[in-house]
Length: 93
Image (cartoon, rainbow, N blue to C red; front, side, top):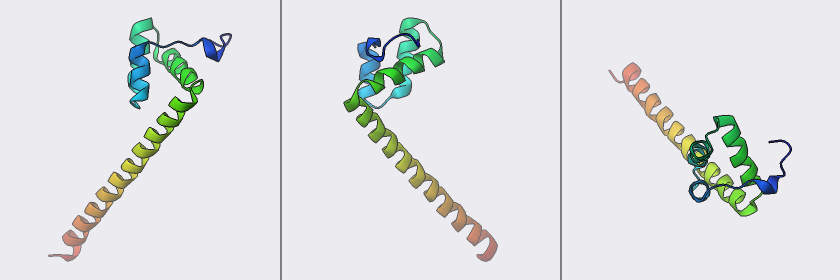
């Protein structure tokens, strides 16, 4: 793929719709199925396409940032619950 210019990457409507919904994995899977290619090549096409679309890149970055914040919040919640259980198991009896 190294010889092709970034502007030559074209994705299907299904792949582009998945990207606009923040579903990069779905877009990669769509490209794999449509083109009959491997995961690495499909990922490269999708990443290259995202790089040529500034508004889409911003949207993907926002989705990833939101997912990261939610994951950190979920982990913090699990740690608080685990600490509470440990406290009551050790000191509560």
